[in-house]
Image (cartoon, rainbow, N blue to C red; front, side, top):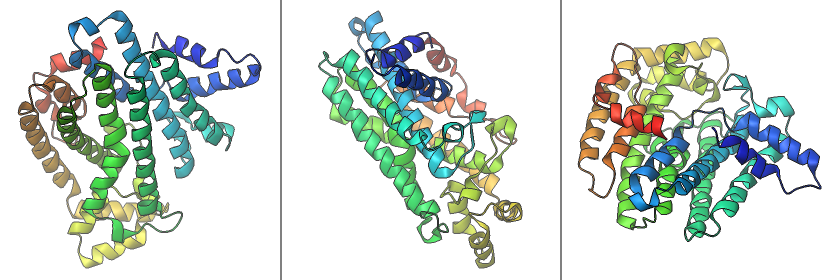
Length: 354
């Protein structure tokens, strides 16, 4: 956060002909970028510190890693502004969403946010050997995230029509998670850290991607469950996935396990804002025991991931993946996930040090 004022200054200088635009860009940045949880950006800095050699861990390079991290935060803000428009979201991070505040000019503002990423990269990395590869990584995963958003719209909202339940399969859900969550939120930060640390081993990247997809899947399933569970002391939000007709883990599992009668009710009620219909969907979830199904899945997946991480190649920093697993864990219902985070204090300390 100490670096943030300099980031804003760099993105609004050298444009003397457009002082009003500079002022507006400052407002766009301050309102949309620095208020998130920074999970993706902090994980990039942690990954770099673990991957880089001792001679690479200079003050200058750590500063550059943090600039890369801010580029990810700006890209995330760009996605959020656009996503909130598509989903007609009114509140984000306890404040009105940007398009509610400024109108549909927010679309152009989102495009401005995207240009800020490449301005920072050009200024700070153009002289580096890794510059072209880093730009390519942002472009590659930006495209994947865009395709994921498109898939989400096609499956869930069907461009304003009723959700297409024929597409609500677990295979389709897994693909959606990979494109919307895994690539940008988990794989991009680690890939950037690898390349900035001059690590270009394709096998190492493939192995890292494989475990990151597994961790991100757990993260997204948990997020989907909390949207339904909606206990503010746990999730901190009131869920809207049912009303928006999203293809999420609870509805996919419910469709797999529901009786013909229950499926009929789900198809009639899912994807509508009517409170009685939302209540009826949640009742079906309860009837099939979705909470117990989730808790069993979470426990089994955590155990499998812990084992998998311990078996990773010695080239990969296992503490990084244990850190991701520990920080994705929450206390849900009567089961305390902190038991999976036993002896994780050193990994949480990675967050504080970055």
